[in-house]
Figure (cartoon, rainbow, N blue to C red):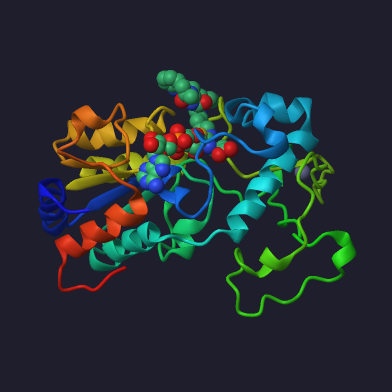
Length: 280
Ligand code: BV8
Ligand code: ZN
């Protein structure tokens, strides 16, 4: 990607000291993690993600919902951060006051070099009891027949090691029982109709209120209250730069719209902002 938009966005990034990088599912699309808008595959294609991602769906059929999240978690395990994730880490490395805020429940920002993004919608790697909220261990990915799991030979704890595991069960799966109260364990994500973690939401609003640039990457900006974060920054006069192959409701508030995939645009943006830094 080149052109006047990229040059303009690069000037804004080079001038920034307290940028916010706000990401959605499009950030991980090039890593092979389907976006919410992408059609579901296999058994899951007959379900609407927005229906499955609800407390009501879990109450009605815990095995269906748990199975869906285990399928997604295995998909993320096999995925690797893409050059976009690494470019975000390069921005954070260059500008220590950078705050990365994500709607994603995958762990690709952490594996891409951003240790502690603000997680608005939770994580696939933080299961807890659905009754007493006691954190629960991550189920081993190896099917019982495979015997004791191999020690992670240096592979990242959340990724890669299991990719050789025979294709695990892709379908309904009974959730484990809480070791304390025996209730079903649930995924540590925020479901539709559930409040966002108040500390994460407060940190996101605070960062957006004090930023001098907000980079919004790969979000359709349709899910609230997350979608309001870029508006907070714009309302307080910070320039907003969008990276998305297609227009979104945020176009109108953006100083620059970069139409392209995050995995290509973000490395190009970082190179243009800091030509001296060889990145990606
Ligand atoms: C709540 C975790 C109340 C689970 C998720 C105001 C107005 C309207 C509705 C509401 C409102 N306020 C609340 C609502 C209801 C609801 C909502 O927003 N509904 C929408 C659908 C209309 N919100 C809620 O229910 C929230 N809770 O309001 O609680 C409350 C308050 C107090 C006390 C009690 C209760 C909770 C919302 C969170 C739900 N959980 N995720 C899971 O993952 O399973 S949301 C989930 O969907 C994601 O986390 C993400 O946020 C969203 C998907 O959006 P995106 O990430 O943007 O992804 P999408 O697929 O849509 O788009 C991808 C984009 O990337 C596209 O634009 C595409 O062009 C682009 N792209 C593709 N490839 C690339 C790319 N970009 C760059 N590079 C590429 N390569
Ligand atoms: Zn419990």
